[in-house]
Length: 189
Image (tube, rainbow, N blue to C red; front, side, top):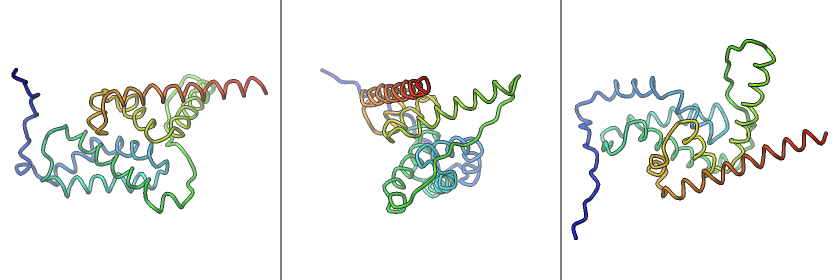
């Protein structure tokens, strides 16, 4: 019985690409997304900025090692996720206290009340997502906010697709439980 192996993507000839131009393009196109991704892990804007900068620096230094088996975006995301996880395991993170805050986003609305309510709801949801354990937070962010498919997240996090689906389901259950608890608390007041 002959088994067909899945085809690997064609390798990119990285030697023919200008590293400085590549880095500039990556920062321009992915900079804000990488910053948001880092923030979802570390919950501190300044540290997220440092990790973002470190991720792009690592891409620059390791450009010759990029095999082209994934997209550049996936490669940069993978580097960022690993840096964030390393930071979360570090002594400095475990021994320091950080204040939680979410990046501010502004939108134009017809009425001030609508704008205040929407901002409040988004802030509550963002806080609930950021309070999830990292293994659930990362799949929620990658799936719902970064629009990665389950198979892409599986490859990015080096976990099975079933594990990703299970974590997504459990994360949604935790978020629903949190929302119900908060709603009950507000009704009881």
